[in-house]
Structure formats: C-alpha cells, structure tokens
Image (cartoon, rainbow, N blue to C red):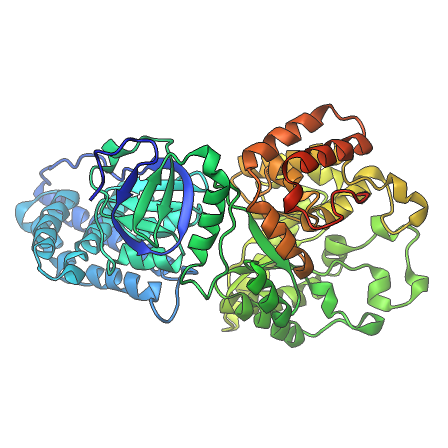
Length: 590
C-alpha cells in the first residue's frame, strides 16, 4: 500500500514487483478507454450483414494475434505465442457463437452483443478465488477490445516517448508488447499479479514493473521523475539531485540483481540510460563483451568473413557465422553491416585499386552494382534472423534511392526464401551515416530507415576531406572540429524527431575523452570494442547527462578543434578527474 502520508519529496510508494529491474523516467499516463458503445437495433433484413461484419472482425483479430505471437519476447519458458494462443482460443470459443446468436435473436449491433457477453464472462472470471485464474479476465477483455476496434476500423497502436514510465490502471497483454517497442523505463499499474499475462510479457521484455499502486493518478503527476524498482516492488519519487551519483550507481546495480543472463543497464547519475553495444564478429568476443556490460552487437563487420584474394564466403558459410552470433546475443540484437568492400578487396590485386577508392565503387554501391553478391549475403542474413534478433546495416549511404533499392531487394529475397519453404526473418534495416550528403539529408533518410549507425571515423574523413590513414595530413584529422560536432548533433536530432534510434560507433564512441560530448549531443547508444567497455561504462555511471548537455552548449562558441579540446580538458580536470583512466585527460586527442 502506498505511503500517502509521506512528503512528496523522496516519497516511496510500495506495491508488488512483478518484473525485475530498475528504471527511471518521466511519468506518462496511459488511458486505454474506448469510445462509448451505443446499443442499436438491427432490422431483420440487416441481421446477416451484421453477423458478416462481426465475422470479418474475428478474422482480422486472428491475423493480428498471429502476428503478435511472433514477438521477439517469445521463448521456451514463457512463450508469447502461448499467451496469444489463449486469445486465439477465445476467438474459437462459444463467445463468438453466442455473440452471433445474440445479434440474431435480439437484433442488436455486434458491439453491444459482444459487450453484454464479455461483461458476463469477466464478472465470472474476476470473482474466482484463485489469483492465477482471476487475472485472466484481462485476456477476455483484450480480445473483446481487439474485436471492437476491428469492427470500427481502428488499430491497437500505442504512441509513447522512449524511456517514459507508463502508469495505467491495468494493461492488456498486447498493450505491453506495443509499449515495449518504445523502450519505456518502467511500468506502474494498479492491478495485476505475478502470473498475469501482462506481467509475464513484461518480464520477457525486461521491463521493470510494479503493480498494486492504488490511486496512482492522485499520487503521481504527469511528468514526475520517478524510479521504478521492480526488484523491491517500490516506486521512488523526486530523488534528491544532490544524491544523483548514488542513484546512477544504484540503478546500474539494481538492474544486475538476479539477472545473470543479461548485463546491467547503465545510467548516468540523473537516470538517463546509455546502452553500450559491442563491435564483434565472433561469439567468444561477444561473450567477453557481455561480461563487461555490452548489450548486443552494434556493428558486425561482415567483410571480416572475406578470405584472402577477395574470396567471398558462400551463403552457408555466412549463415553459420551470422547464426552463431545471433544465438550468442540472445535477447539482444546483432546488427550486421553488409560488405563494406571495394574492387581491390574482391580481386586481391592492387592493380585493380581505383584512383580514389574511398570515393569509388564500394560498400552499398558495390552491392547494388553486383546484386547477386548482395543477394547471397541477404539470404544468409534473413535465414539467420530466425534464430534471434538480427538487424541489417547498409554502409556508406549517400542518398534515399540507395535505401529504397536495397529494401526492395531485401523484400524480394525474403519472399523468394518463403516461397521455397525456407524460414526467413523480418529484420530491421538501418543505415550507416558517414558521408556529408547523409548528414545534410538526415531528416529525409530517417523516413526510410529503422535505425541509424553513425560512423564517426569515416564521417570525420569525408567531412573534412582528410585521409585518416595518411600521416602527412594527420593534423587535419580533427574529431572535435566544430563541423563534426554539429553534424553529429544534426543526425541524432533528426533520428530522434523521426522516432528511430542512433548507435554511434568509431573512435569517438570508444574513447572516454569523447563520451561526455556524445552524451551531451544526445547519444544514447554506442558500439565499441571490448577494451573500451569498462572505462566507458565507468564514465557513464559517474557523469550527469544534464552536465554533459551544459558542457556541449559551452562548446558552441569554440571556433577550432584545439580550443574545444582545451575547454573539455579544463572541465574534466575540475569536475570528473577521477572518472578517467590515467593519462587520458592530458593526452592529445585528434
């Protein structure tokens, strides 16, 4: 029961933790009310049409449920397909037959006939003594709401800002899956037990959830900053900002408690989550990355599979490599970048090297020019994506047309596999943003991509026209050049406005010196090598995102990279000196 007599500052609401983990975010109330139902009389001549309308809704609901049963939360212990299998059984039960009988006998509209029967079923189910069965009334209401929406031509989508804390009286199982797509920081409900389908699905998505918080709408206000502690079954309000550093570390420890199968979530001291992913092409490398705190593989460089003399791996060789890492990451994703290679890679003959290979036929250009090479790779990726969460990254995207062509090819290859009776997944498709045209047109790019991978190494190279491997121009390769920082900010903002995530990789993401800048620019996902994970994770949990934002704003009047570096060094020494590995702050950074 909530401690309603406590002062709002630091208040603690006590409920029941039904999904482990700790999350912090702003309160958003989710009200799932439907438009009022109206009882209407159906003329005898229209009864059969009304029954047909109802049957059409039933078939539409079945299709939706079969799609939901393919959720990535599905596993052997608590398969989501079983939960929605129950919903499908409801659609095959006497409820449907009785609804049709009510329409026919009472000559009333389908929505009202269904409403009366569901009220009867739900009252009977909710009155059962056994909590395990009593909570299942939500399944009946979920199916009924789905049918009603289908008859009205509506959908069940949920719109939510990422990292919000959702507060609702109760949640239908399908609503939890919809919410999970938006990565909420936590969920608070008034009703629901450990065995409810709502709670089971929350656990599979690793959503911290606390139930049993009565009168939540009176105790909380929209926009309140709260911590949802699913381990202790508590909701903490308005944490003291002076204790922010402790809160950040508690959040990280709280998410690791009892979750040996997943690394801890990392939070800044003011509760902003920053996800570390690994750059890895080997399951053993990822196993170590996971121990260090990485969650999934943010960049799998598939060109690592290309043999000597440009010998491309076969479809089955690629499939074996991709499925191995897909299984290794488990519930987290692996993002496989299609071959980022050029003509010289394929032939192994230096004489085939173009005059300017960095600007030549390589990456996505090579793939679209040689569609059979790309098609073979896509077949392997699509086959492997049935074993886990697998994403596709298209490298060196410079215009929207390349994304459209690649996505058409992906769809064609997938249909071919399915027609051949070969299982194929439906992975997300992201793009590498690393050339100036992609930065400038980022707002258009995000409309055609599911996520962005921001490659800082090539971005600096192309933006400043500096070969990063040419020592003669090393002084012109400036990671902290104002144009670079403005470009990163522009891409992250465009992705955020478009509702898709951005993963930052490259030298910047793996260096503690640059990480506060990336956080201040809005980066919330980074992909780095194993040897950087520990120091970067330590830095993230020791800084405040608000301070990082303020620091980045002070850089806006710096006109040179050298001036920016000096300002960062001064701030780090004054405020975060103990968070950096020895020698990092005073070293020269380019």
